[in-house]
Length: 201
Image (cartoon, rainbow, N blue to C red; front, side):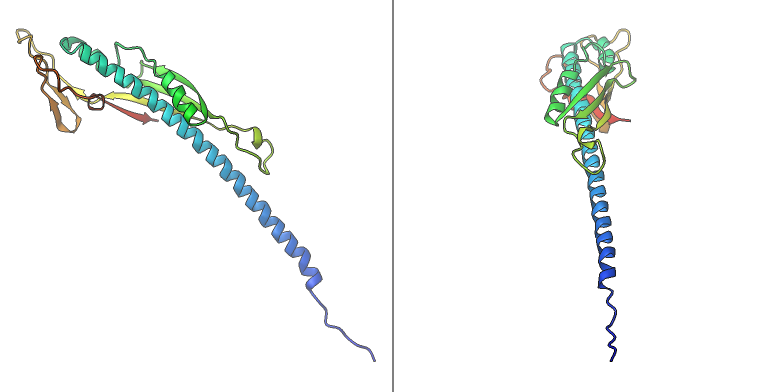
């Protein structure tokens, strides 16, 4: 008597299962590589932004000190508010901030810009790392940032015949005015009152 056994699909399904699992694993590794690269780029951008802002803030403080030193000579104010009268040496501070963010930077000062500032290019010290993409173990991300210093206050010089002992009033953003008394210069605007520092495109 001839016996018939039911045909089993188990043997045919196993190779398909292995192929699907292998494809999913490959896709997961690909997503991981993309994520590693994105994280590395984000680190580079963070380092560039922080370094550029640090450089600009350093110069903003020096500009404020220069203004305080020359406060009794209002004819110098405009040049100072436009970024003149100080050395743009903020790149040293940019390097410090980059090191704290595991990066190196190339920094350039630009006092000639309409709003003077700094341009920074940051490169991560850490590579993207090992992945299924060849060469990523030696790949480092590089990003750029610009930070500028923009005056926040305006003033008018006194006209001919005006009292030389009266200082101009500073009219600043957000509707804040500073009436300066040359006999009492203890309450003066702070750096953030005089200048706005921000990232620029």
